[in-house]
Image 1 (cartoon, rainbow, N blue to C red):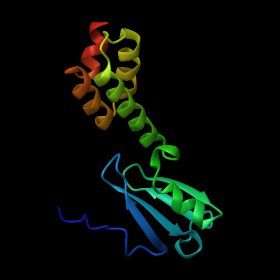
Image 2: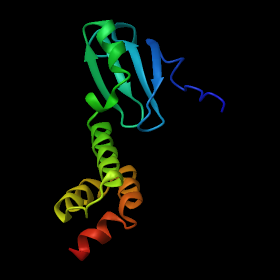
Image 3: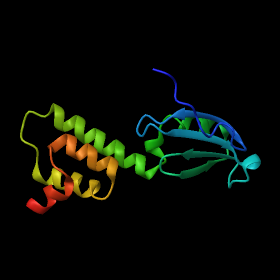
Image 4: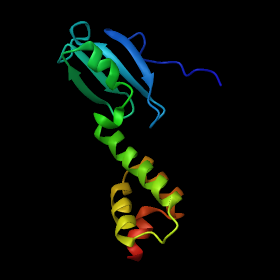
Length: 131
């Protein structure tokens, strides 16, 4: 499989990036001084356009690996993936309150809605309307 081309690699202040395994986009590290951004070292989730600044380059670089720790939208995806994992391994019937919470998180978010649909076979809006 050919490696995805990073459209950000020629941005002013670009330092390095990693593929975001949650979204398929990129987590990008910028030199905030060169890019005229707040904070010395700024990381970006390209899919959700979330920026977070760090004073230490090593810390910022290590955070590229875990977008669920600093991008709220990615954090929600991690929650949905964990829920999918739990539901897949479960032998007992899933608690309706758990599914209702997951459906509520997924409404209006195409990525989470797709995960919910994969889990339950229904769209979250449809699931909530039946409750």
